[in-house]
Length: 312
Image 1 (cartoon, helix red, strand yellow):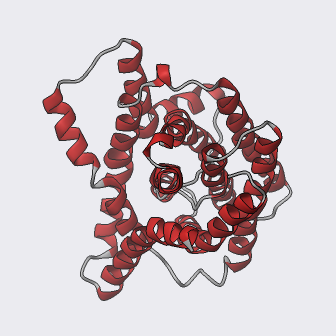
Image 2 (cartoon, one colour; image 1 turned 180 degrees about the vertical axis):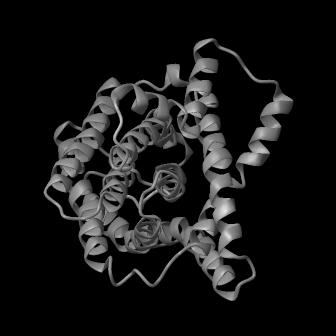
């Protein structure tokens, strides 16, 4: 029962904001064009700001567990590479392929990871998901940019691809934050207060916009894709990655963190990036919503099974 309450408390606010966007869009209170403009704002300002704040606020030097970082890096990268190999045999359009591959690795870890771990193990264990978020949120965004660029339909050489990636707002924000970290430059407290306040709107605004642009008409068309994707993302990937982590000797909070990292619902940021980089926005939105709903029973099952086996 405890795991059910934890999962619901973590997922319900996300679902509520998406549904509010759906209701607002369906009633015409805000036009589709306005939602598209909001989405552009989210992609070019809000999401880069969140990424910047996550990196610049983290103490990366104290967040070192090389074995854990390497293991998660291998899991994420292998998932993306296998996904791209599978897509080579698929007849789906590139706009769908790019969304599927990036979403396989891009979970909503920042929002769900720390709360779930803290709910089970308390504040003392919060450093583990914070460690993973500090290292892998930037990596998610870099990998997603490269993947979507690969499936954008534009033929380009390596130099063009590199320039296009570097011009991506998410990558620019990450590089700026890393630059400040490397030079040990601290922003004035007044500036940080302003940025922190602005950053609070990112997640609710992104979820609201996703709901406003959600299209039900293509749900039937994408039903098979959604079913296979959620089975792989919410069941297969966490099963494989958790099995490996157990064999490596990891237990308790680390396993819960990996459960969310590899088996959590898809990050809302993937929608804005998909739309801006010529991916299938409808499919991206549907994956986010469906995975967010289905993750409640899979989280409960994951936590229950790990606990029953004595790993928690």
